[in-house]
Length: 310
Figure 1: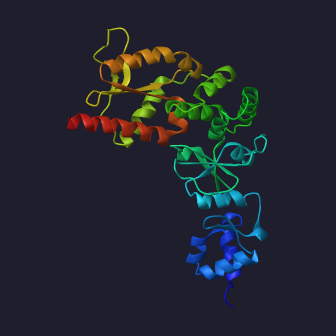
Figure 2 (figure 1 turned 90 degrees about the horizontal axis):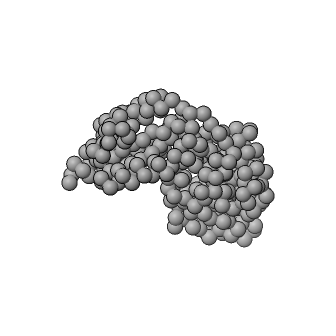
Figure 3 (figure 1 turned 180 degrees about the vertical axis):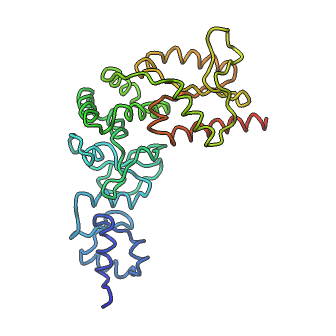
């Protein structure tokens, strides 16, 4: 017996927690007139342009699946992600994050913009793309009270979702982009956590391996830049052609943050000589390897090639 139209709709909607797009329906051979007739009967309910839900299959995840059908680049985030991940936060509507300009007419959906959402910041949960625990806590830093956010962070780290290093790695990545909330998260981490130093030789070894595997421009290790005074100023890695310095920081996280002003002065000195400094830490190299090293190599390559072409 041939499969009925309703059966095909149910089968497709079952892939998305009861939501389905008109494109999927039409690809399955369901005509526009059949879709329209099922809207009139209430079998299909429009939730956005070209997106429907099947009320008989509705669940709390239906609206999230519908949002991701309407906004294919979106990720469930903020309090919505926190609740899906089992964090103790109050419900506050439905939140998703997507690239700028990707808004869609979805009633009841709060859309946040982010110019960059790394693969490492996203996980699949019941087929729904959700921000990781570390990124979720970062997104919540500006929408929760300081004490509530600190308590939530401590609770989550205590159960390893995220680990301390994953949260610090996320902070370093977000802070480098100048994201709002950097100061709040830095203060929270400084007042809450302590950590051990990592062997800088091991960190430099890992960075070197990643640079070679990604075909980065040749880098000089333990390089003495032109402004080296014989005492201070040797850098971990440098490309003299592209005038780019890469510093791999294996200090304790607290020590690293306290030394930020000293690092800034060194970076400004390099800048005065026309050099650019990129700093990375142990947590990023270990927990966000592809994201951070892809960025580093892209920068090194661009500056190296630009210098060669000048």
